[in-house]
Image (cartoon, rainbow, N blue to C red; front, top):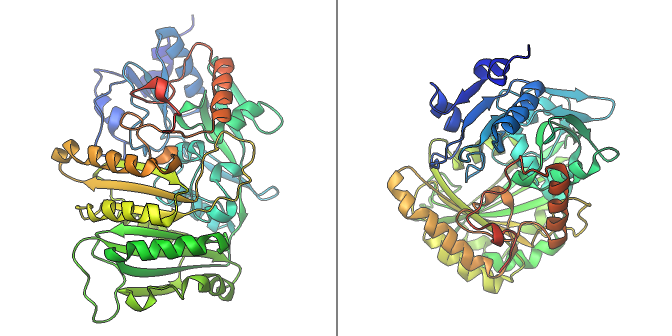
Length: 464
């Protein structure tokens, strides 16, 4: 006699009402602002077989399936009422093939804390995420905006294969030669991917011999002049040079001797570069040394760095245990349009950890054939970070309203910094969105896998 699904999965399946349900539901969600959405059950998968059995159980019970890899989606996409949440947090192994340079990694592997040091020991690198505790699953499925991304491209471009549990409960491998539609969708579909990825195969690269940072501190009132200059120089910057302006209220910023930190928001122009030597890195940074604000800077630091140090700084800017409201937009707007809007937004940051960034991207315009398909000259994202639950009545409305004003001049959004229950925009090209719909229809005709969490399904992927 075949054992019933509950017995086969034993105590890895936590039903609503069971002891430990609340921990299984939200214990691994990074954002302390956790929604009141309640899955029917949470499966703490320990193997591919568990995932296969979980998909089968969902079919038997009439549940949709959601997936959690690292728990970092700001809107907690994995939480859906009356669904089966398959939590992949126990799938963490990594293996490297030195003959091909390909690393295989499970979706819950943390890019900065686990994959990066694993590869560094082997002299290899991968464009992992800026926040070190983000799991690879959501990061790669959404596109993957990471270190050295302007040069290496989106992290999903380096996904060369994946193992997937499909809606019919089969474990299949997808690469350029077999199940290529799944590889196409995995590069950018995000939570709309029609399957459960249980392993990624990633092309790695020779680790750079040198990494430097160049960090300037400016006053908030320098916003317009700073961004105007950066928009002028960005098209000519080597793609290995990655300039980011961060509006921050953190107290620990570079300051010249004898210079006091102004109250409130200041601007950090933080630029990183990876190169073959210190001399080459410094030569690449030279383009940002003669800006019009050099004589008015509050501080300046230029030194060697590495991904570990940069990740530690990112972790400090994105602390655990806080509530987050986040939104973003890609934009091709000129500086004279964008800068005044950002100055207004940045002047309203009012908690210590809240911050907003302008990331000079200048896309190459040669994206490979994949689902990911929306970019812009600059990426703007705002992160309202606060501790008091009373802020829930204010900060989400503020961040989405302010971002909507920017998005009027935008081209779309990056899935990783969105919450479609509050504000929607285009995240795939029209062509890519249609193709993804066709793949979902073929691969998941019964809608077993939950798609995008949205307050307005008809408004998905609509810009304007």
